[in-house]
Amino acid sequence: MNELTADEIVDLCLKHTLYDWQQQGVTRPIAVASARGSEFFTVGGKRYLDFNSQLMGVNIGHADPRVAEAIAEQARTLPYISPFMATEVRARLGQKLAELMPGDLDKVFFTLGGAEANENAIRIAKAVTGRNKILARYRSYHGATYATISLTGDPRRWGNEPGMPGVVHVLDPYHGTERATDDAATALAYLEETVMLEGPATIAAFILEPVTGTNGILIPPDGYLQGVRELCDRHGILLIADEVMSGFGRTGEWFAVNHWGVVPDIMTMAKGLTSSAVPLGAVGLRPSVHRYFDEHVYWGGLTYNSHPLACAAALATINVYEEDGLIDRSRKLGEVMADHHQELSERHPSVGLVRNLGLFGILELVRSRETMEPMAPFNGSSDEMKAIGKYLDEHGLFTMVRWNQIMTNPPLCITEEQLAEGFEIIDGALGAADAAVA
Ligand SMILES: Cc1ncc(COP(=O)(O)O)c(C=O)c1O
Image (cartoon, rainbow, N blue to C red):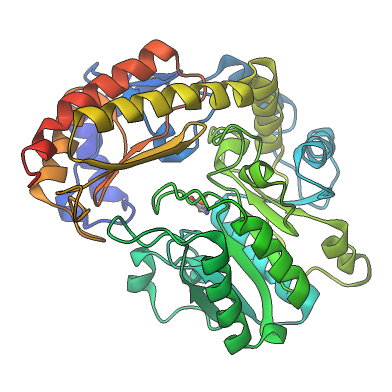
């Protein structure tokens, strides 16, 4: 299929295109030729099992023919039209999302991805409330535009400072492996204190990932999200749920907030919306928010708002979730994943913590179960973690190994056999970490 060799592809990519989040001189990407379901194949023919759905976005699996056909059909009929027009795919997708979104959220603004969705979400929040500040959490990622990298709490923000003024970061209930996670009441008390000290009437919104993604699959203690909702209501602060990664079945519900029955004022989506096949994001709004724009101009716009190809891809993708029962499947396979996690933690002293909700999962490795010292420091790596990454790569398991963490976030269509295969490879890789346990 490819006319160029793997080396030629990689060399040209590195010569003429810029790679994300890394020093260009040290990266050597994999040349990928094709993908299907939970697997992808290199130009050299090597198979990888995808245990991270790429960037936790290929939820229905790679290259679903139903989505491919919908995109092709839309490309033949109307690939693009100005966002000032109305199209059937836009009408149908808006209606479908209004049906799927929690509570009374019933209107969306379409963007190209997650960052643009969050960017517009905070602008909407500022316009509607007339307030300026945005609260966000430290252990978070909200995108890489100027505003959203400022919202982002993790170290990817550091190289982009000073950022947008008016962002206030708050601590999470989770504090790393060496300290206990706060219960909901403690975490809410700190949050309330920050709100009081900042001045509640200056805060437009609190943006959070209901289940945090790249910062460690952080599942909030029960009561936390409900408490955040109540606190926001009390102070007229809008709650923005960033469901870019946690949405569309990843946690075993359409949206992670559903686990706690919390309805955000604004909800952002991307990734799983099209299973990443085509770039598309969306900002979902409650009537109490979007009614403001019945009387006021929305000072925002995008050439590719409601792009017909992307809308067609999203409609077909949502159809696959429903036709294949993927949301239920994520919930059920989440139980199987929890068993695998448990087994690994019984077999390997280096496994300090395991967590998952649906197929959103993680292992945190430690040097000692007594001290819970992480196998690699915050924002760092270690020889052991590097050895694990190398082993997984050599054995054809693609996933994210970050700091002391191994992510387990496969496509929702993964089979039980493939799930077992992936965990068997991780089992083999953990030897390198066990040897370092005190
Ligand atoms: C929770 C969350 N929000 C926002 C984004 C940014 O999305 P995008 O890369 O599509 O701009 C990401 C991407 O990983 C994410 O995980």
